[in-house]
Amino acid sequence: MTHLEAAGWLKRHDGYLILTHLRPDGDTLGCAAGLCAALRQAGKTAYVLKNPEVTHTYRDDVTPYFAPEDYTPETVISVDVATLGLFPENARPYQDRVALAFDHHPSYEGFGAESCVDASRAACGELIYDVCRALGEITPEIAKPLYVAVSTDTGCFVYGNTTPATHRTAAELMELG
Image (tube, rainbow, N blue to C red):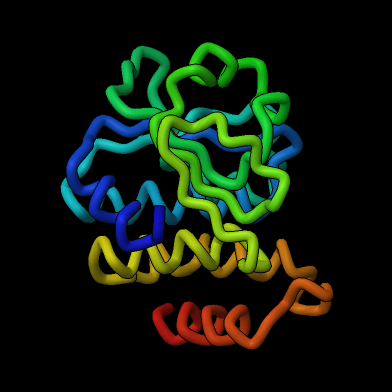
């Protein structure tokens, strides 16, 4: 589905748990935090499943969104996860419940009931930015982790996957806070 269709889908559901991948980088964590903030801003209940491998580099950006231990999600989504083998151990109980998967890897295995995948994006953060814009206003709370997602997955814009669209996304995120 397109980012606009995904935003519409997100508006129709609630009770979100967002899953990230093993050895979490700025893209998966930034996408999770930014999307979680956007969903909450839209009036949804949303949390990120605690990833036990989060490093101090990203901890402050994602920790406020971690789900409480007793949280029971209605809707499970994943961000920047190409294969089921990339889920951390604590996410495995949810892997068969992924209702919507967001990714930018051409190797995405299609495990989500629904998928929003765009392999032309240098970072999943670019895709999530478009989804968040369709959900509502981009606040600094949403923009910062999405900028982290885009900048880290492009090696601070030096990797060959960086495109003019990547730079436009980064510039818009900077302007938004």
